[in-house]
Length: 532
View 1: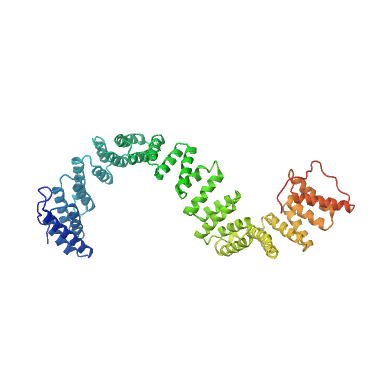
View 2: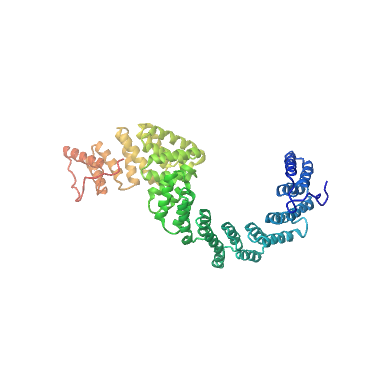
């Protein structure tokens, strides 16, 4: 087994290549050693690797395997010797010097001088191979890690004098330049931007119509918030790569940055036409339309939720807006997805019931309300307020389940906060009207309707209900007083049901010989209003 130095090898690449037979033998040994490594027998693998080394000379892959084995038991001096031999055997490659520098940096605590040696080796790599962007980047990183920014900047400034004709060199140098000359300090931003942009401009000069270079340069200017420079580059990239949807997305974002929202929207609309599942474009459109076209913004918000999912509150907000926009079908689809991902959200079940009610599916709406109540009892008790049970009662009434409706109206009344008794007025009115139209509990119904009118004064629907109660009780004077006041308050468009009640009451009063109070000037009898 070797000591501090590896055994001598046959001449490597610097002094002559081994024969084909020798290379084949060495390759066979190399793969045999790899197999042994996988079986965790490092010592056996090491012996075979060294045998291959003696036959073929140093090589990057073989060297890397040996270094790994030596490093594992902390035989770093042997590993270092192999790294140095690789540098000697491959003098025309910056890779050997950089591998040595990285090795010294990684194990700098092993010996006092290894940290400084790592930097010196990297400096040698840059000096010997000034057109190696990898070497420049490595040395810049070493200096920045050591908190020596001025030296890192010197490396970049020296590299800026390179005569390299490769666009990739200059693009890579732009990364090193941004690290050495950061753009986040307002005091130095302008000067640093001028330095960094030189690398990008040089890459563009050499690249011609290379879309990869154009795209990277555009990204640089976009990050710097220079839409004036980024936009023409993104436009060229999109023209050269019409099928590159990501490039067109960036074009759209840059148009937004430039304040050209209409053009940006056109780009993103075209993208979602090509790919309906493009979440990035849907999000952009949602934002673009937010202040100009609420319906379109909502449409794209719903698409984002369908495609990407989200918090239950996001689903609830979008579904509520869809309902306001008279789109219960879209809200229903969205809520079903929201419930799939958030089955324990009582609010989503409640909102689903509202969409089912709007679609006329009262049976399903009642089931959803029952599910919402069951979940809310333990997870969201605040949902079970007066408004919740009032909604439930309305669905039950429309479903023809009048006893259930009565029960839910009572729950709504009972759940009204004591400090806000007026919130119970809708339930008082609707329960009274339910009994009134069913010819049930008429006197009690009258008390409920009077209570509703006491809680909320001068509300036409409540006055209409109370007026009709008086009509049924043949108290035509009181009926007309309520109904005429309701009609007056409903101007300019009282509802047809209210007008019909008023006409019937006037006719009945006249037939009964009741003296009618004079009509107030300006009273009208046309139009429509909300029906109870």
